[in-house]
Length: 581
Image (cartoon, rainbow, N blue to C red):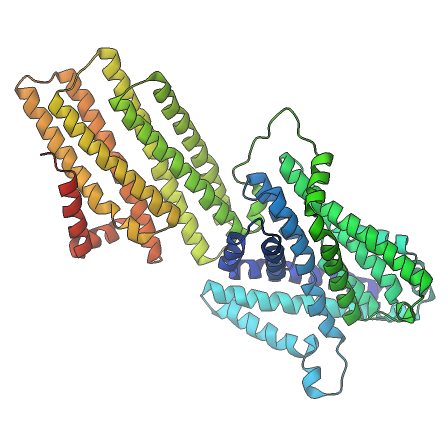
């Protein structure tokens, strides 16, 4: 093996890793909705969690990436530690898909149809299709499909380059001696762990092992401990990602490590006993690409079967290693680690936005109660909720901007834009809540008194605003365009009520029934209530527009008012419900 072979080996490895990365990211974008569906099926049920981890990892082709996501979910409070354990176990099985794909390169047959299964036969065709999709299509989904094919072709070309570069090693005595040294199980485990820790991908290190196996100098007995060690080495990524997270997230990373260390220790002992007592001839045979894929899958399945019934023990072990302290954890609402998987990062943004919506609506409702029955405690509660809503807007807006700067699908980009619009409206609703509290405080401080007629009118518009808030929050949380369509006619009724109440106040002022100071406060209250309903209308408009895959808020609202019979019927119903007389 000369200098040029070494350079070819390095180049092949670089192409292999690059192709795997490109293919994984494109698969992630292409299967964004499927990833969200898989996440939505997460329960405390062991099998559901196991299949979720398996499915996500099979899609994105990286157990390390899945485990990093899991650490992020636990850190964000999106997933419990118990759920995380099952997902991590499934991820270990899902990562074996890559080895099976790479094993196709080992097909050797004179039969035409069997030979067509070799990647070297069909990869050029996939590359051609991929480049056509990527360069000549304007559709982002087709471009991602093209990147998947190009990534796969690059990965397989890198694999072949590595195999060709190391082919000369079959004649090198030193390489043969090194492979014999790895027959020592402990050395094999260490070699696999170190290699995987360096490149931070068990799939890639298995691919390198398969390339070395193509020389015929790697025995199955030497390959098995190396594969076991690779499972330990892949934990490095998750351990690094857990730095700076809360206790449960660190526990999730330790579960990943302890799962692989315990599984490796147990099955390594079994392997050593079998080799010492039975001495199977199979272990001395040369490992093939296919046999390495089989061993990789079998080992991960056996580890899962061994430890799946003992998830409770793994959880207790993690708690023992990272004990609860006296200082409570501070939850990070959105974890930066989730940016590596945009569809799931967006899912987390939706969840946080729903929390923000709940906080803002609760603030406004508390402020309405404050107008009727003022207490300092209620006023302070509104201000705390407003501060919380501001915090939500800060973290969501900066996070969504970062997310939008990444290469994401058109639907995800539109959803991110919708969320950016909506969180601004919810933040403004909480601002109006504080404005209403300030009006209530002014009434209290100046000992102002509204007439009985004004109080009745105020209770009517407050009821209408409470209903429009409930409708808006429910429509947003459920992403329900049908519910959203009911917001606009109620918002129009609130606009009409505002004008009616303003006119009524002017008449009372002219008749001397109301003071001018109370009139200013009355005007401020009506303005804040009407603007609150306007923001609800904006949120509903975004939901309706997204159901039509576009964001043209004012155009769709005008069209809805002018042409919809449902709008007219709902408007008449709400006008009757909130009539003043």
